[in-house]
Each structure stands twice: as structure tokens, then as C-alpha cells.
Image (cartoon, rainbow, N blue to C red; front, top):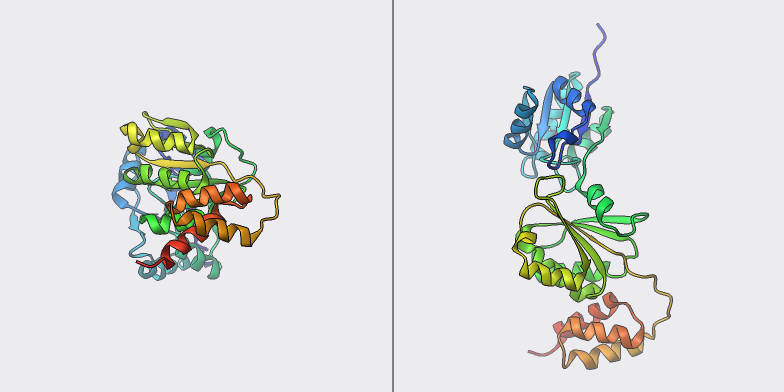
Length: 285
């Protein structure tokens, strides 16, 4: 008797509207030997709404390393397992990377069942350039680390896509405006494909102000799309930049000192901000 080969199927599920589940995805979920889920309670509710009953196996950030050998054994035994996240396409800020790598190393076929993604959905309605973009996931929760990460991204010319939690969106937009410049255009999408879907467009400065004034923007699932930086064409005098930052940082906060130094020297805001924060750390108490 020839042994059947197992398969791992990576299945995209709706990010809000159940009608977005493809016929192929439904069929895969219905016939899988087991469904590997980020949150089995969430996936169980989805399956119930579809009239599907299949065994569920939890796979999340706290148990993935321990769970992979068991799942590989099932795949080696010829089972077909479907990998899903709570919403959208798995692996994008979701568990599953260790499992897919181990399956690939073991020679297990991996199939992607495409479908909804908050990243591409947000890009489609952002009204910003989408010919080139990069996904940065969630920024650090602490402001110092968040601003340091943004400083490294401030010169990125591709459109940027972020996820953010509702309770941090106002702080995130404020930091984006401080590091990238208040005039950089952006779009905040909220509750995509759901009944209360909202799309907020404007400059980072305008969006930061709105996040403080409008409590609705601070609710639900959020994806932020930010226009990339303009290409730098001008050679920067590094000595002049350092001197400008040094003088301005004596009197102004790092973000403001960086903004003015960048305008005076033609340098990028990220380069000026990095120097300003360096000056702040080295300044005597």
C-alpha cells in the first residue's frame, strides 16, 4: 500500500465580512484532517457559522515551538492540515512561521489558499502609491523604541504599512508626525470590511489631531498606510548637519531640533533626528 503524502494548507480567512471567504477556502477547511488555529475559540465560531465541524489544534506564539514536532508527525503520517489565523492571511504578524519552515525542511508540500488581507485591503483604499510598499507590522509599544524605529524608516521611499492597537493609535500618529514630518500624507483604516468600516485620509499632522479629538478612530482593528519619503537628491554637508543639530538641540526638543536642522541643511529628518536623540542621551544631567 502506497503511503499518502501529507500537506500543509495555509488558508486566508475573512478579516470581517464572512462573504469574503472563497469557495476554495471553505472546501479546504471542510475536508482538512485538522485545522491549526491561532485561537481555537475564534476559529470554532467561524466554523460554526459555516456549518463545518473539524478537529482544532491551537498554535500561537507561546506554544509553536513545542507544537511543531507533533504537527510534523501528523503531516508525515499523511494528514492534510489547514493553518489559519484569527483573520486574514496567516504568517503576516501571526504565528505559523516555525511550522511552515519545518514543513518545508521536511519536504512537506505547502499550499497557499489566497484570500483576504488587511494589508492589501488597506493599500487598495488608501489613495497612496502602491507600486512599491513594505509592511512593518506593529511598532514598539514604548515611545523611545518606537521613535528610534521610525527614525530608521523616515527615509524609506516605499509606501509603509503598519498595524496598530486602538489604545496606541494617537501616540503612534503623533510620533509619525514628529519623525516623518507633519505634512507627510497617510491613511488610517479601521474595521476593514466590517459594518463600521472607516477610512481617514490626510497629513500625519491632521490625523494625529483627529486621533485625539475623535474617539471612533481609537476603536477596532487599525491598519495605517504612510506615503514614502521623497528621494534624496542633495548631498548633505555632515559637519554642518552635526553643528546645526548640536546648536538647536540645546534649546529645543529632539523632534523640533531635527525638523529645523533638516530644513537648514537639506538632510533627511531621520538622519537629523538620530543625531538629536544621540545629543539628548549624551547631554549632562
